[in-house]
Amino acid sequence: MEAEMKELRKIKGIGAVLSRSLVEGGYDTFAKIVAAGEDGLNKIQGVNPGLVGSIIRQSVALAGEMVEEPPKSKAEKIGELKQRLVSLRRQVQAFAFSVHDRYMDQVASKNGKNVERELVKMISTLEMVESRMETRIKKAEKGLTEAEKRFAGLNDAGFKGVGKRLKKARKSLKNVCA
Image 1 (cartoon, rainbow, N blue to C red):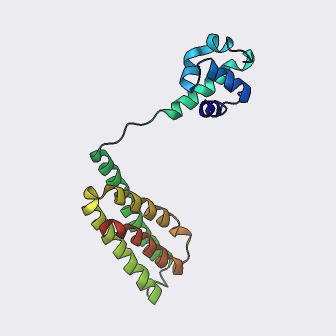
Image 2 (cartoon, rainbow, N blue to C red; image 1 turned 180 degrees about the vertical axis):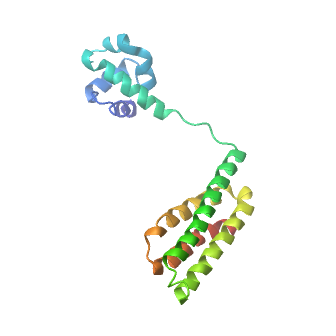
Image 3 (tube, helix red, strand yellow; image 1 turned 90 degrees about the vertical axis):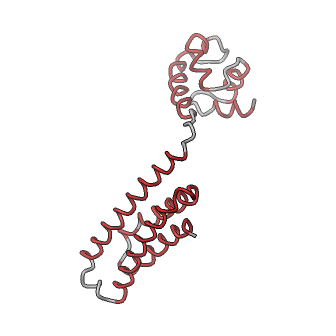
């Protein structure tokens, strides 16, 4: 009963007393409040008639958030991961051209060679992940999420930080291949 009351207090205009009245009246979920409508809520003692419309609208929104998506099939998960992988590969390739253009004078340096090497390793690691993805879905999802996060901040990094961040992003993907 306490859990239901706490859940109902997410609605603006429902406090501890009104949530108790609603639960005791049988309206312990957002869906039941929506189903009760204005007539049902007006019968509950303590409900402000001026707030009934707002309570129902908020309940509709919160009930919609509570609807769970059906679990995805293995094929759907793999398809989604492949799309993310292709997107990340395109980002890496575009980033490689961007680095070459932005840091043209530094590409010939030792750091430049390291960055180029890490970019090549990153692309080959992405290919390895793609080949092993079907048997390691959870690891692939976790590694890909981590790599996407690490790669997202690369455009802001200075030239010296690019190589290190690329290496960290690649290492998060290597766990899928191990």
